[in-house]
Amino acid sequence: MVNETDLRHLERAVELAAAALDKGDEPFGSVLVSAAGEVLFEDHNHVAGGDHTQHPEFAIARWAAQNLTPEERASATVYTSGEHCPMCSAAHAWVGLGRIVYASSSDQLTGWLTEWAVPAGPVRPLPVAEVAPGVPVDGPVESLADRIRALQARFHGRG
Ligand SMILES: [Zn+2]
Image 1 (cartoon, rainbow, N blue to C red):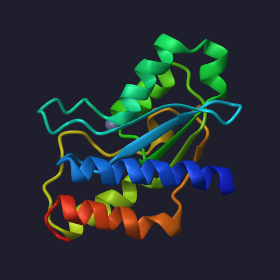
Image 2: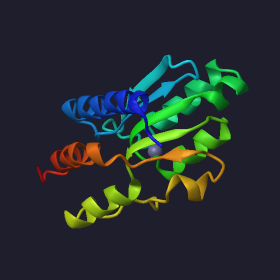
Image 3: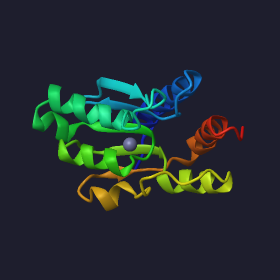
Image 4: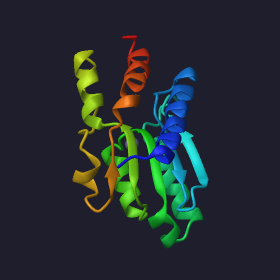
C-alpha cells in the first residue's frame, strides 16, 4: 500500500534518476527515510565512471551500516525509482534495512529493454522478494511508470 508520503519520497527518487541522466549516468535514484519521516541519505547511479557496483541502493546500504543502529535500519524505508537489482537487494537485506518502495519494477524495466533490443546485462533481474524474502516491498506505482520509461528510453537512445 503506497500512501501520499510514499509518493512524495518516490517523486524525489525519480528526480534523482533524472539528475543522474542529465549528468550522463544511468537514470536510477534512491532515498533513505527514517521511521520519523526524515530523509537521511539520497543518491543516484554513479556507474558512468566504469564501476558498475555504484548503485544508489548499494550506497544506501553501506551508509546505513555505518551510520544507523540495527533498530534504526530495520525501521527505515528505501524509496527507489527502479526496483533493487539482486546485488542491492542482498546488500539491503545483509545490513537489515526495512521496507522498500519502488516506482517501477525490474519486470517493467526488462520489458522495456527487450522492446528496445538492449542486450541483457550480466546479472539476472530477479525481484527483491526472490533475493531478500523477508523485506516488505511495495510497487510498482503505475502513475510514475511512464516517466521512468521515458528516462530509460533517453538513456538507451530510444527517446
Ligand atoms: Zn543495484
